[in-house]
Amino acid sequence: MVERFDRRTALAIGAGALASTPLWAQLTKPAAPALTDAFPGKRGMILQRTRAPLLETPIAAFDGALTDSPFTPNDRFFVRWHYDDIPLSVDVAAFRLKIGGAVKRALSLSLADIQALPQVEIAAVNQCSGNSRGLFAPRVPGAQWGNGAMGNALWTGVRLRDILERAGVAPGAVQVRFSGLDNPPGAAPDFAKALNLDRAMAADTIVAYGMNGTQLPLLNGFPLRLVVPGWFSTYWVKALDTVEVLTTPDTGYWMEKAYRIPTAPRASVVPGAKDFPTAPIGAMIPRAFFTRADATAVRGVALGGDAGVAKVEWSIDAGKSWRAAELGPDHGAYGFRRWAARLPAGSHTVAVRATNAKSATQTADPIWNPGGYMRNTIETAKVSIA
Image (cartoon, rainbow, N blue to C red; front, side, top):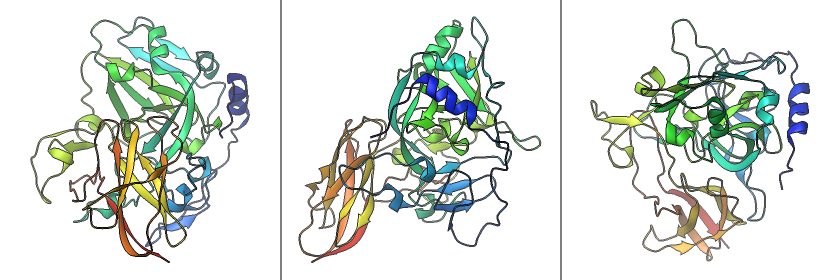
């Protein structure tokens, strides 16, 4: 079980943990992904790119028995930054979260100010929009992630709406935009994402300072990051330092050009298609993954996307019939749920699918879009059971 910590402990941890040392060694990207321990606070990660860092969690790091914790250890949690110039250290005493735009009172809050607000915790999967992009065919450009551009954590922080209510949202506000301490090169656009006001004010949208019972790792967004449970991690802005309330929808690059998906069903279009209507990516969809598939165990983790995992099923006859998998404890609607299957003796190709509480489920046919987003095709594995 993850140990809880109070605000005083969290503040003490945050204040004492930042040494001004180089964050990582300069590495040359290998021809194929390799495991690395070279990044502080991380071990055994699949190196996708050194600068800006892209570190993938090996699927074995998610493995465990049904009753094991479903939370991904911080030192195995995936990393994804867009620009090279990310914070290598943070002056905790000087740090301020700025809230401005269409508010009645502009605020500049210290970490102590934020941690003085009511504390909340929520279990939630943080999943890159391009998780599993490397499995798309035909291949699409971008980081060639396997299935490990994700992780599940118990996040500790405060409700974003408590901060916004303290500032006082002005009439006519429609969105809230977020950006962090990372800096773009040259004239490139600052990485900034926006949520509609209702999503920003939802009770489960939080500004987190804790992750799995300790402070956020620097590579995962210390000292603060936005947590938007059920939504892809492009909105989970790391090293959050600016919150701006808007009276018109954000038209910046990262909303109008990047991280957009086809409006077609399952965000899927014919390979090579162009000029199709798009919309910003948003809520996640159900997925079930194998973490082990051998003679000793067939098991894995599942996520429900924007709703809880209702069931996980397996099939050994190409989807003609499905049987219920055993499920581990439920830690909340937005986190991983462990599953296990008891297969009969023989050699099988086993398929696994998840269905969420909104009845959304997975299908076997692949999807394609030029961003390599939203994959949730049913996973299969070959198993021999004695």
